[in-house]
Image (cartoon, rainbow, N blue to C red):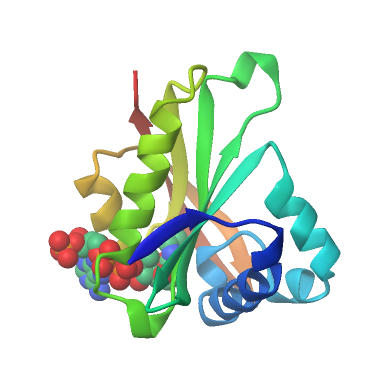
Length: 166
Ligand SMILES: CC(C)(COP(=O)(O)OP(=O)(O)OC[C@H]1O[C@@H](n2cnc3c(N)ncnc32)[C@H](O)[C@@H]1OP(=O)(O)O)[C@@H](O)C(=O)NCCC(=O)NCCS
């Protein structure tokens, strides 16, 4: 398995895997399939080139199987926080340790950014696989947000978690 930061040339395959994730697990992501399906490849290239975020991809036998994004805060008073968003592993690649490696890559890379002192993420309250992974990596929950997302008329609670790095 190889994990690398995704760049402009990965925009097409990133869009494909992202749309699969949004379609299969609408309750796990704040963005919606409809919003992102309309994004042009140029918009996605811009996102991948942004200095405010790094997106990593996990490749297995040359195929993009998983993605994750590390988001930085632009506001000076929030430079000490960064966010992990968009973790998704395609079904056929699950159980291989791909999510764990993606998470560890993000954590290791965040650790060496001088300003970043803690990592935040949110997870749907019923998402046991993801919750188990985050707890194993040392994240602790600090808030339970009722009705955080509304998808097709159903409400989903979210757990907010943090990992201190320094
Ligand atoms: C959650 C998800 C990212 C896990 O991906 P994965 O590559 O299969 O996970 P890994 O193989 O790296 O497993 C790492 C750990 O996660 C936990 N885990 C993963 N799948 C699990 C499952 N089905 N049941 C329970 N725990 C699970 C385990 O703790 C596992 O460690 P272990 O194998 O030592 O027990 C994947 O199922 C997914 O993309 N789900 C849909 C999108 C999503 O929920 N994203 C997270 C949004 S916050």
